Structures are given as C-alpha cells and as structure tokens.
Image (cartoon, rainbow, N blue to C red; front, side, top):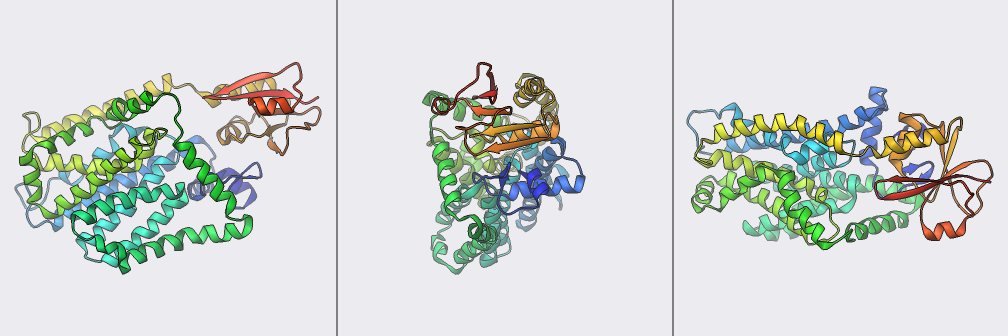
Length: 443
C-alpha cells in the first residue's frame, strides 16, 4: 500500500491495485512511504528498518522516563549521588532483549511502530501527570498519541490506555478525573488527530466501509482458530518463551518484603503500579478472547520492561547473586541468543512468498500482467511486482464470472467462488500459509 501511495500520490484512502483497503488506517503506510521516498529504496530492508527504529526509540523513551523518575525520587536504593550507567539504561536494555521485541523489530510489520505509539500515550501521561503535575496537559498529549495509535491499528489502541489508567486512578483514588476537564482534553486530542484523516476520507468514500471492515476485523480476532487448548497453550507456554527470562522476575514481587521496599519509594511505586496494570490487564483481557493471538498484547511489553527494571533496582539478591551480576549475565546471554534465534527462525520459517513467487515466475514466463480476483494479498503483490519483478503489473478484476480470454488469473480456492466460474483443464494450486489459491489462464 505504501508503494501504491507513492505511485498514485493518493495518501488519504489506502488501496491495493486501485481497490480501497479499509482493514487498517493508513499511518503505518504513510511512515513506510516516507522511508521509501527518503531512502530511494523499496526493499524489505527499508521496511524492516522502520520496525527496528521504532523498537530503539521505544527503548530510549523508556530509559528517559526511568531517568526522570529516579531524578525526581527523593531517596534512591544505591550509594553515591548519581545512579550507575547500567541502572539508568535498565528499561531500554531489557526492552530490546525481550524475545518478542527482537522478533517484531526484525519484521516489516506494524507491531513495533504501534507499540511505540501506545507506549508514548501511556507513559507520557504518567510523566506529565505524576512528575510535572500538569494533569490537563497529560491527558491532552496522551489523547494525541492515542489518536495516532488509532490511525495505526484502529480503536483497540484505547484498550491499552483505558484499562491500566482506570485501575491506576482507582488505586490513587482519582477516578473522578474521568469526569474532569483533563479527560475531555484527552478526547479532544484524540478526535483532532484521528478526525484530521477520518473526516476528509469519509467525505470522499463514506464512513460505512471503514466501520464494516473494522467490525469484521474485530470479529475475526475473536474467532477460534483450532482448539481452545491451543489458545491456552499460546498464552501460557508460548508467553513464557516470548517474554523469557524477564517474565520470571515478576515472581520476585510475590515476596512481601520486596513490595514493602518498593512502597518506600513513592514515584517508583506508582510507575510499578501503572506498569503492572498495563501488562496484566492486557494479558488477561486477551486471554479471555479465544481467537486473540499473542502478538496482540505486544504493546504491553513496555510494562514488563519497567517491572523487571524495578526488580533489579530494589531486590537486594536474585538467586543469591547481586542484581548487577545477574543483569550483566542475562544481557550477555540474550544478545548472544538473539543471533541464534534469528538464524533458527530464518532457517525454520517457511519462506511463503519467496516460494510462491518462484512458482509463479515459472508459470508466468513472458507475461507482463497478472490479474487477481476476489483476493488482495498485499505481500504477494509486493514480491511479484516490486521485489522479484515477476510481472510489470498486477491488476484486480471486479468479477470472476466473466474472465477475459488469454489472461492469467489468481483466485482464492473457495467452493462458492469455484462453482460460479468455469475452470480450464490446467489449474495450478498454490498455498500461502493457510490460504489456498488457484492460478489459471482464461479461455
């Protein structure tokens, strides 16, 4: 979509092959388009660089908020006037070594950028609200970043703001702030940012297509794919692996003396409370949705980074060793594991689009145009047209009932659709992940 935006110069209504695409708002594709334009390079490296930079900026932001809290705290649990460097960088280093973050930072996908905006929204609010005492400004800034998050991945972004916020305000006995001027400013900031795109594009194509597509996206996310047991396995065993080893540090907070120690530092305690509300509320709210994938809780990873940092800062011993020694060991271990993990995932993960593009290159030898009907796989379009240049053009057919003679068409393998069209004798079956397609030549 980003490349099509650059080709057509239309950045308002996302489209694939000229057909409007309403499943996701356009902000991430705007960022990709800017990256492509600046670099002059349409490669996967450029797209992945956006994710990598998003993860790095998130890590720097977490460390910055952490430094501000430590500076504001009246007393600190270490000797000396200034915290050691490893203490100052704790949240950022931990964030960058969480396996799920490593995974998303290396992919040309939306998650890392989306998590950046969600993190900005919640922790800018905390910084302005608790450290600066600017309550109205805190809500307005959070609303602006929430608006950007909605422009990235629709309204589920609000889940990561409101759930921890309501729990936090309840703990602080500030629930009445939900009826205050500040909360009104939050909604104003959100509507200003989101409305700056939504109103013009609604006047152009209407709001019903977006509403229908987003509702379908939400209902699809709640659909059970496979057995319920598989869902529980993802949110237990897989979750431990995705957040290992930092998730295990949360067990340190079971000990009452560690919690009492944390409560003696008011700002650190409040940062811990907001972070645990973010991570735990995201986890359990998605655990209760049978079709929710583990990556849906990725924006809550910043909460885990802060909670792990607090464990290193305040727990006098971890497994009998000093926190500094344990931290150095884990960071060294994880940086080495990062390369092993990348090598393993690259060697084991099927290269779906590469494989299918190679197959299509053989079948479409000499053809300049491939037609799609009732399917719009954006990654396949990228691989065929831009990366491997199998064809010069990929076009979309509005109907499959009357396919012109002599053209190659790719259609989804759906029984209802196949009953409507006359298939030739030679049909090439293709598969991308769980999706099946048929390639044939109209005759």
